[in-house]
Image (cartoon, rainbow, N blue to C red; front, side):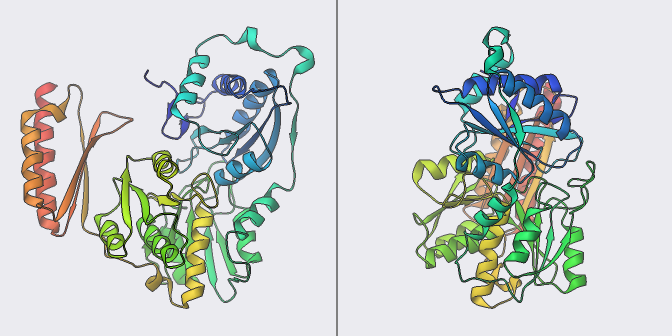
Length: 450
């Protein structure tokens, strides 16, 4: 069955375009019905980021959940990993995060978590999708069984204490000057406070949300402002979260960006040395740099690759018993602590290493030199360009040219008619020639099918 609503990370789209009050109401009803199990009073935790449309979607979800008899606990702006943690810790039947993650304010989304704090499986999402397209009038609660909704206090403190407990009790961040960029998003209150409580000298940017400025020229997808602030304040480190704080990018004391691959290298190596790796392996996606794979191999750590998307990384981790995984974009999943990506907790693990080693971030967080990586997109109107004989031949020729000194990844986009061509290897010029030859072949195939 094709999925009309759910993508790789919940339901996401333009507010009042795809994400309407009517859809949110129906999602509340369908998800509420799907997670009613047993005779106990069911409840759902709802958090959100700072988008203007969050008010509209939150109220529509409340109407949907209460109409099928679920009680609603509203926690306001909170990081996605905090909502996942609270869902489990408060014994809720369901958790909801209203966010479009790193997108700009015009978009919004609905992410759902099961009672154990994990994102929903494909099967459960399909079950909910089926209900979204049918009338649920006859399944609504009787008048006396309607749900109640209330806002709850103290959840910020719960997440701060949770995050602090991921570090050794005696560890302090005293002496570290930290610039934190919260992307004018969900973490704008909790993360600066947590860093201060841990002893850091904290300089905060991206902490003045107005409903419109989430992720706008700030946060993990636009770290330029953070780089400049780190240099200006002569800080030891910069931390950039995205709008819902499930991903992180760091900036070293020189103002240079440290991506998710370097973070996986730092955490993977240090956890292996401390005996904390559940198995000698780290899970990443097909987009992670070959340099990471080679570095980990030199440390006796395998790199397992999954399709793009943090949900696939987590599925592999749970299936095979690994406890470190993530994406180069900065989604880092440490399953010892949380059930989803947590940008702040990942940053704390690196800060702990910086304090332990007493060395600058530029040294601690540079574990390998990334191989040159080139990514190009080819748009097409119709047909199956990847089945074209000229394209197949160009890919085979490219793999021969790289000859074990690089790799190719050619995949169709899951959201638009585009073929993505990625090549990486030791020789930049060779990689570029290989990628260009495949792009040309795809372009010819697309033109012939148009």
